[in-house]
Image (cartoon, rainbow, N blue to C red; front, side, top):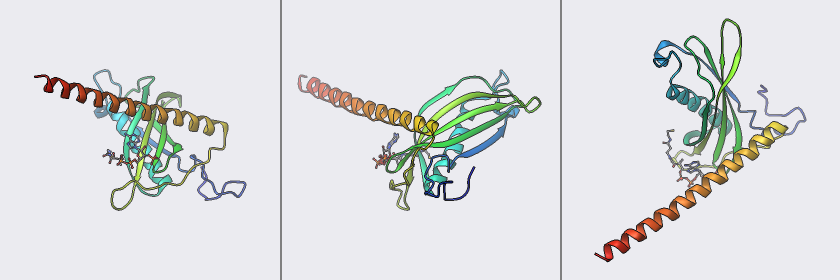
Length: 184
Ligand SMILES: CC(C)(COP(=O)(O)OP(=O)(O)OC[C@H]1O[C@@H](n2cnc3c(N)ncnc32)[C@H](O)[C@@H]1OP(=O)(O)O)[C@@H](O)C(=O)NCCC(=O)NCCS
């Protein structure tokens, strides 16, 4: 991973990969359930930390988790295995950033690595007053970055659409309740 502010072409490097963050955890007995595999909530907590570090690194600001749009557990991870998390900035709005996290398990004896989970979280950068503040944009460059950017846009559009529908439903429900009370 490059640590300079310049891409190979000499242009400012604003790719989401620049802030990429990796985190490793060994699964200990206290992380496991009765099946000897790691608790989903433990993985969620590690994902949140790894993603927050990438968002903080990209924005150079305090960040808060606003939402987790998707989390898929694909395969269990056993006690004694290494959990590797890799977070990249997929998409940047004005003050929000979507971070994608790929989770892999590693068998420390054989070296075998398996993709075990994927998650998409949104973080918001805050200023010193705790208000949302603008963050640097990203320019997806590779085909993979462009795909991740477009997919993140779709998730954002769906989230905003759902929020709109939910407020319309809440408005309808409060009108119905008002009508019922007036009819009593
Ligand atoms: C996230 C939070 C800062 C947003 O505050 P807000 O007053 O709604 O801010 P705004 O309406 O100005 O929106 C700011 C950005 O947040 C995004 N946002 C707000 N709510 C969101 C949600 N539920 N999911 C994803 N993004 C969200 C907006 O889309 C906007 O993005 P943009 O600037 O890129 O367009 C606020 O809801 C909050 O503090 N939540 C609690 C966070 C927390 O405690 N997390 C757990 C511990 S870290």
